[in-house]
Length: 152
Image 1 (cartoon, rainbow, N blue to C red):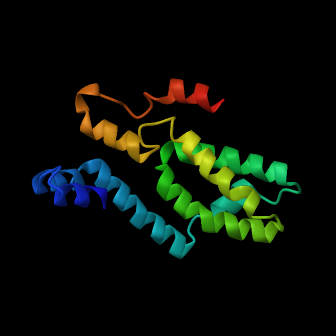
Image 2 (cartoon, rainbow, N blue to C red; image 1 turned 60 degrees about the vertical axis):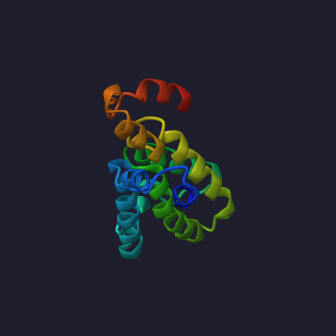
């Protein structure tokens, strides 16, 4: 929406607008949203998440399991679609465990944002930086050393 507004106000040209929308990073994030919608519709991750999250007896253990699981997933999947996929899964899991879902939604968001610092795939911003500045030659795990320090 902002890019369209910039084009309408002649801050950027229509060509620049279309070039930005055709960027591989922007396209990849869009595709990830389509994939996340399909995963949500089919509930394909449900069995795997039940395995990783289990049936903890306390909220603290449940949150720890969620942190570890999403910390791992968030480093190799883009964080925004991951949150979109995980919200309904975590809501159903909380209901099944009789945990208050409110104690899991913000931690879900925070751990995926934090884990996004580990790889170039982790966030939309990282993907765009890799694609817009190819001369930087950013590799998949180049962010890991600094990201793991921040995460710990």
